[in-house]
Image (cartoon, rainbow, N blue to C red; front, side, top):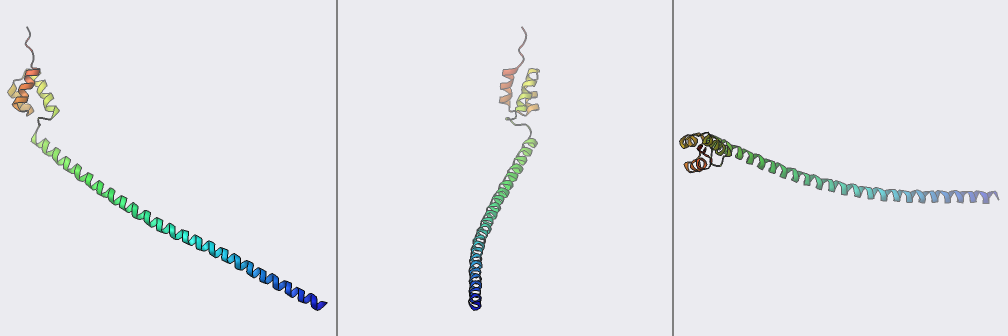
Length: 137
């Protein structure tokens, strides 16, 4: 009976050990599967992050190009304004027309209006015709 009890105890211990082995083996497989899944997700995230970095670099590159174009356009506009200011008043300048109207209303002759405003003679004639002071009756 002692022998049977010992044998039963050994078999029971062996079954527990084998069961524990398979239990831990299955847990290890589950952990390995989870590890593989997380590794695959991480690799996808790395690829996605790399794609986003490339897109951002492209966008920033385009922004730099657009910014450079805007700076060049502003520089060109400033040069044109500088040339226009050095050339004197133009016929499109509203300040010249306003000054011509004021001078005409003040009674200045056409030659003075033309020389002070830089407007062409035909424009000065029109302004003096329209805005000359009317003689009082």
